[in-house]
Length: 422
Ligand code: LLP
Image 1 (cartoon, rainbow, N blue to C red):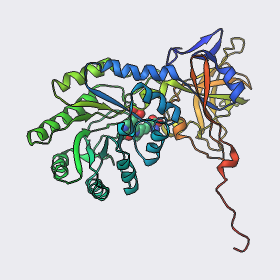
Image 2 (spheres, rainbow, N blue to C red):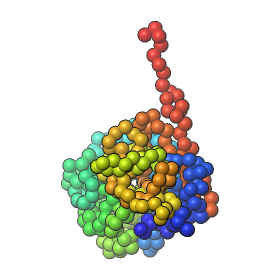
Image 3 (spheres, rainbow, N blue to C red):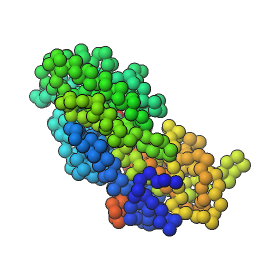
Image 4 (cartoon, rainbow, N blue to C red):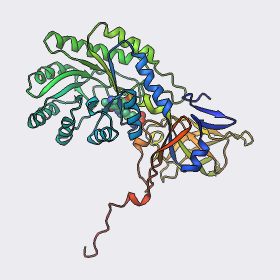
């Protein structure tokens, strides 16, 4: 098979991330473990900057995909800004030492406290998702005597042809303001004392594999920007959101150069800066989940490879029936290939990482679940009182522990049994 990025490779049958053998990582840090390649993340970022060379642009990494401080820091050093959806994510950006003035704030439910905090840190802009939010933001900005820069997230009603749970730009969605309401809202916003209108945004979905829905959305955004410009409301940036898909198995995904060519052509000579909010496409293929086979369980109808990682570590297969490639860490040509459902320890039939996979494995072997860098650890939970996995990043020949394995004691340290008198 083709591995999703060049720094993941086999050498004499052993799987390596950059210069480090995954077996060595498992021996030193244990399993389950998320392992990322620094090179693969840097390359993914550089692929964006080189595709958009010659056009004013800003890449705001959607850090919900993977918000580890080391990854924020790595991307900040490459020049990235950040797309956040909570005060917690902004606190992470600050804790990583990145610049909050390169942060844009998305999300439908921003609280007063979150707005306050973001204004204090002088973030680049708020992507406003409703009329009520606009009024709240004006109030908070007024009370702190600051101007809140905004875009409206408009809902362009285009079909990104992706999984219904992760398509966000259709009419029936909770996100953004209706396209036909947008011009009026811009006029209202422009008249507000503590709001500064700076741009327009949309985000139509995730794991999008075609350029066409973006082209449709961009045309709508630019059309609206032109109408507003004619009324004297000049926008400085056009934000096309995130959503570019990655290759999980045999997905023919978007070629970034073709995407950039479409954007450049559609923009023409308009003066605005392009913003993008990629998450998955920067980190998804750069990470894997390393897990060990605890037991093989042959059955009449099915055989199971029971591993030490579960749906609490990687929820995507259970939640979206998402496919992640699973490969042996050490090739074992001597063992006959057999078909397994690769399942985890969590007490739910839905706890699986892959179904009907042909593997050459024995009890105790290591497996790598690929393309787990995005929405992997970020969506992990403590279900079944399982501590979350550790996270490691390999940079050439060195492995850095960027998050320790969670100690089980910490999971219930803030809980109390009720006093006897009750
Ligand atoms: N911008 C906004 C406003 C978003 O809501 C998202 C993702 C992104 C950018 C980044 O999208 P990306 O480039 O990563 O596709 N948990 C799901 C994905 C949920 C995406 C939510 N929004 C999954 O595991 O597939």
